[in-house]
Image (cartoon, rainbow, N blue to C red; front, side):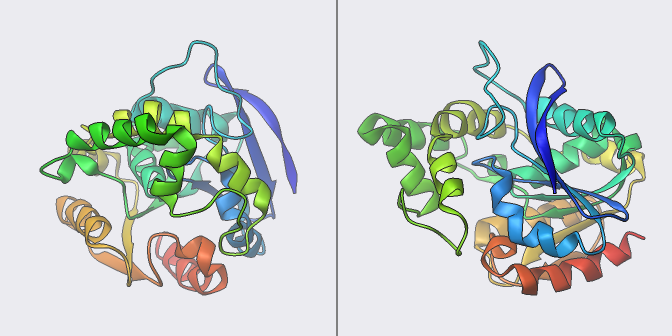
Length: 262
């Protein structure tokens, strides 16, 4: 595995590069740390050149100076810039949760860098009738116990304890990303919806997927995207984080979906 920091879109991005073969970018959701993908990426690297990265301002990607807000567009530009700097375009793209939201935006803004995409359970709180109340909810958690307390509520994890057998370093980094998650990224997501017309115009193949055991929110957001694109909704094993919780099982089904993209 190769790893390091590179200059992308006006910031420094930590990335990891594994394997050989067709190019595949994995975009992580909120908490922004590539470590969630480690066992999954290792399995995929047997057949693909796999790129993972800590999103802007998260974990090992330093927070840009005076950076206090973001947008889904900025996040998509980062992903496109990363692929371009690494000379890995066009690539297949997988995004989970907020990462799937970013992947869809990547297709609308930079379709030339994408060969095909799997959007797994996109994070689209704007579909909820009380979407704007979410920001107040998390602000209340921050006021009660600070970003680390809010992260405990958000992830269901306890600081200092491993989850899914992943490295404790990942948990420590995740808890250090609370300010970015609750003050920068969640506010950027609350009013965002994918540009369906632009997605159709891009003509990049898109597979929309949801877990067999996922929550109603993520199943509904996935169904909404599939319906808007007039395509099927594909099932993958497990729930929202199955790629981390049961990577071998998830990878087997995921690889079959990748074959649909050619």
